[in-house]
Image (cartoon, rainbow, N blue to C red):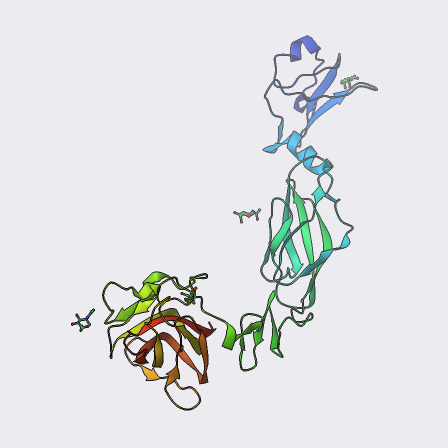
Length: 352
Ligand SMILES: *[C@@H]1O[C@H](CO)[C@@H](O)[C@H](O)[C@H]1NC(C)=O
Ligand SMILES: *[C@@H]1O[C@H](CO)[C@@H](O)[C@H](O)[C@H]1NC(C)=O
Ligand SMILES: *[C@@H]1O[C@H](CO)[C@@H](O)[C@H](O)[C@H]1NC(C)=O
Ligand SMILES: *[C@@H]1O[C@H](CO)[C@@H](O)[C@H](O)[C@H]1NC(C)=O
């Protein structure tokens, strides 16, 4: 059996050049009959396996240093929030961002993943930073979930978290005026107005709300004022209430047209005559259209004839008997001041 034993007394100087560096003055390396290789130091001595610069000690193909690091490494520790932490309460419709944070005692990077429960719909977890961000959904709910923080060695710690979402009642301050009905939507409200009122909050009294043809307002641009049969060099775009001039038609069949830009609810009109002259319109009719092709007569109490100014500067306003849906409004002079011409300056009222 002795032949099967290989017993060496090795001095450090002899071993330096070999694969293993032996730092103790003497050590036995023995090859056992069963194939075991035994490194044996003397009493109180250490056997040290020490690769050279950049070298690696492998055991069964495994990097011994990495293996030991893995065995010794500690799992991550949740730091930023208590483990059963609420991450906060957020209002629906609002975007938010919160973070969970775990630290690896070994100082390595952490990957975060959702392992159970649900994040609020519309939010996501950043697997590298632990940031949960997105837009809070339109619900009143608490979302509970577990996030796993895993280090590079596969050691992990799970943390339980929750996020509260509070649906905001956008109608709580009763934003709709004049008896309008409020409907609560995600991060906003809508008002359904009672007849005669408009605007986002029903703040607009449609019958007195001008579209801004008026010279001092000019919400309606020049290009949206046109005319048929204009007298001489007068211009449709001067046919604005309070203009320093006015539009003048050249007789029966001429008209001044206002294009409101889109279809809206028109409640009435007002007119003046041409500024400083005898060109003023005593009666006229109004037609309206949604498409610019088919026009219908608007009605005031008493019929389709609207009374105009009995002097050039007087503003005469009329409400339609029934508001109409229209984009185009035409003014047709019917009777004008004797010896004059049908001059007009106009305004249109309603709710867009
Ligand atoms: C090495 O083996 C020999 C023979 O078995 C023994 O006498 C000696 O004490 C051993 N040395 C060490 C360092 O274990
Ligand atoms: C982390 O997220 C990125 C981007 O969404 C993805 O490409 C990557 O595979 C993820 N990594 C892990 C470990 O889940
Ligand atoms: C009035 O209109 C008619 C018909 O287009 C035209 O023949 C006439 O020249 C116009 N008169 C003036 C003064 O614009
Ligand atoms: C309707 O027309 C008005 C005036 O031209 C304009 O300010 C508004 O933006 C338009 N609205 C839509 C929905 O097109």
